[in-house]
Length: 446
Image 1 (cartoon, rainbow, N blue to C red):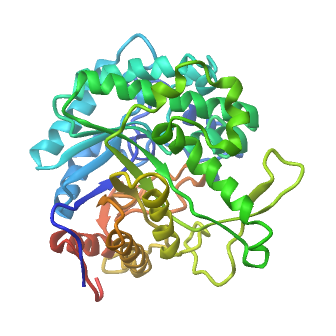
Image 2 (cartoon, one colour):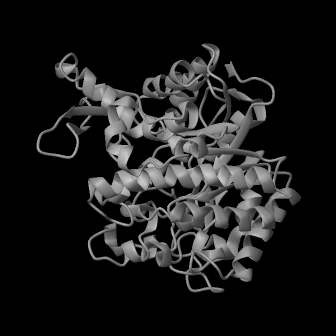
């Protein structure tokens, strides 16, 4: 049995667009994901997040599930267009009231609130003004952060500014596989810098208005590998991949500069004082991790590498993501060795599997339990070797809208019947409840 240190934080994560629904209700504005989902061919089955898990109306039931799980913290996100429908200016009191109720409900159940200000659902009204490619976006975001700090700051333990800014920049603006669906490499670089600047300004705002709350951000950390048959030839491409996916968002915060390999790409966007703003100290880093990352050489593209299909010998999730807990360990050790060992909370980790409701109503997701055993053992290994890891939050509490994959892929500890909205805790829910209760990784079946 692998035990975790006293005070290790166990929580769970969700995001607003993926679970809330309530799209037409109470004055919520449109987001870029509403627009993206309405674009034919972008999302599997033409799905969208207009109803999702109906958490907007069913949140008390979901908060009760958190309490039953034994979680001590809840990382959720705030939908910017629900509280500021145009992104700036007018406030939507009914939207703000909703997050008041969520936070109060957490506190009533003995949980701590860790809201994330941005989990990809930018107000469409701001996208119409250029979105993250507009330098003004940094100020828009800081103003939004101030609104939420004034509203919730007396009850929030930790703030997360951005979830996975690398996905917003690269997949949303360069690859076009996420909203806003752009395929412009130069726009992606510009968006990445403006998101970094927005983070820095929000840190200053949150510290000023909520000085007792911790502030951090969340990044999916990749340890890149070349394909085995090209290991020597492509080693430098793996380094460049890590500079793009990790370094663009970590180096400005921790070192006050962009990676040397990419400095030329960013130079035209960096104004005097920007890096000083971005490098304001943070209290923690959230780490998301799901799968190993392989790269191979590419020609005629914006970058000299591309994502490569991992070797055949890995087991796979329903997302066709390779399962490799060692890659998780390697990613965590990057932070220890390269980034001065910052305080880390693992804010997302999990797998999509083929979850079937059995005749007795149970969902016996042993594949997901095996996944968590592998990844938690490797997290424990990283901690034993000195990595400063302070908590773990599986993705996710609920099956939900999985972005461009729609509702086909299920990551939740709790099964959701999207027709009836019935919640059914899975075997993995019982497993994670036992982990939390014992503060240790047990064996056996659940």
